[in-house]
Amino acid sequence: MAAAERLSVHLQSYEIVKTSNVIFAILLIYIGFNLALAAQSPEKNLDQVELMKQFAGTWKAEVGDDTIISMSFKPFGIALEYHREVIIKVPDGEHNYYRKGIYGFSGDMDSVIFAGVEPLGTMLLDYGRFVSGKKYVSESYPSGKKHPIAVEEVVFADPDTMLVHSKSLDNALTRVALWSSTVRFIREE
Picture 1 (cartoon, rainbow, N blue to C red):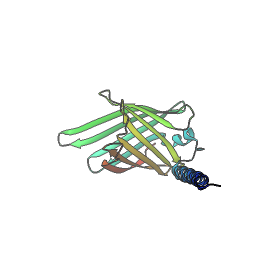
Picture 2: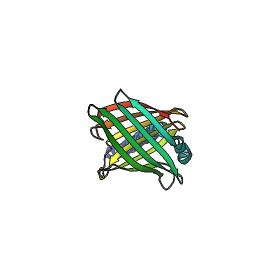
Picture 3: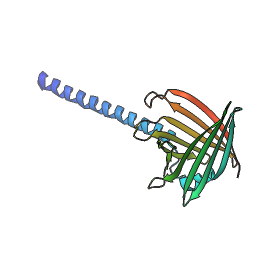
Picture 4: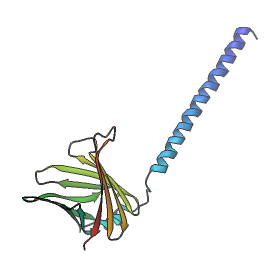
């Protein structure tokens, strides 16, 4: 075998090994990425419709000395009608802020969709789901926007107490929080 032929065979072997190594590295990255996603992914077998029933009723929170938040969730078929009122006491009386909406479900019943409206007509869409039996997470999108403006995590500490942690987002790419709060709601009925 001539030197040129041996060099050609050697180079071909090298290319096969190099290609195999690249494929192996890509495979390892793919497996690692999927394992990481699986570790972060919520349980797929959680019954979102049943878990949403935990919200049913009227909830109240006092924030500081001047703010009261009241939320009510009423069954509407398997969905929930939602009404929120925020009352802020000011020296000359009080300011009231409202939001109404409905919580429904995706076609496969695997996630929760909220459509809400405020008195001036501002629409808001939330997409969320229970990631455990007691923890609900969601992202809020103003109508027409591609990036969320807020994320929320609700934890049911017990049947009559829920902790709502909200964080506004400066931008969905950097996820910089403009504000963050945790409010404790107590069931009234």
